[in-house]
Length: 156
Image 1 (spheres, helix red, strand yellow):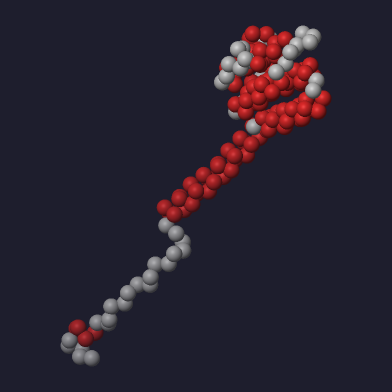
Image 2 (tube, rainbow, N blue to C red; image 1 turned 135 degrees about the vertical axis):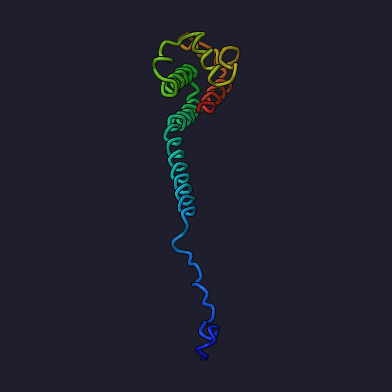
């Protein structure tokens, strides 16, 4: 080394260590937090929806049991009674006792049509529901079962 030459005292350029992947930058932490929040929120929403629609699954299962019972016994009066009971219970569960309990006759049929997005209860085979206590009522069981099942599936 030459003491008079200042350039001879310089060292080679040393590059810094490469940047590691840990710890991540704040943006990655925020993104991870948002992603976790979205996943937890989605799972909670799915669970809440599953719980909220439990009445519908139960009603559809009861409908299948009513249909099987009718196929076995062919009792139209029992079918009519069971379907009326199922509709009323399901409507009370879904819409509340205050709104449903007082409905009867044409109001009840109009409510069923409005909430089932159909006209089957006021103009079709579902109209028989309002005459369930009349003896010897002629029931078109297939159409009535289909109308009630359609109404149940339209509930949310």
